[in-house]
Length: 356
Ligand SMILES: [Mn+2]
Image (tube, rainbow, N blue to C red):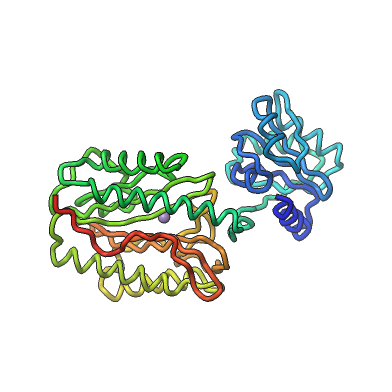
């Protein structure tokens, strides 16, 4: 945590801020160790305070040992204002994300004597340390194991919701805190919806079934997608699957520290476009994962400046979605290295046919 606090203070110096208010819960957790759902960090060059309420005082003292724990009463903003006056704060950085109009008003009133400067802190979390990487790997191991289990039990006539339930309960049994996001089980024509969360639709022979899910282990997320086929695939299904698989494999090969994110996206996109399916790949190639399921930088054609760096954990997930027909997506998490990447997800990417 000391290293992370130093990182934050270096950022403050660079931005010419004398103080920083960290309010996004994942950032509070990252910089202090505090996992409670209500609390903010107030940081200057020489002080580090965690402001929370009665419910979290004991937890905060245990988890955030490098911070002075301040208990606020009815209004957290009055407390922030008081601290800012005591510390003679002139220029305060604050996170704009999730700050409502109302909160902004309260903040402005409490800090009338200080200049408020919007900041983004998420990129400071982009490169994972060893401790974080171990947690992401465990979240990946759990998801891989749940997938193997579901491949063994899934059958025609099961509903998408049952499949999602089986994935989620298996992950819980293996140590996941919760699903990383609403589990996607999209079968048949529904597989043309990239974010088709599970419904009561029953799996039928001939369906593609896209499973997109993840585990959360000590706050860290995993994310994987595999597409199964119920029964024998048609020629077109084989061809579409193979196109996505080739795009996925090629894009993984293109991941390397220093690469522009959009250049990695383009590897998969060009391949899918050449195969004639370009208009059916309407989302970005991937995103980083960590304390949040979707983190910056994104692998996307619109990310013009983002570059991959060592120890980012990033998804590679091309897809083809044909309306009124179906779709395929294949997704792994890889860790960016100086010479390429290490693939964390271990489940097979060959098309699995479920004959029962
Ligand atoms: Mn994903």
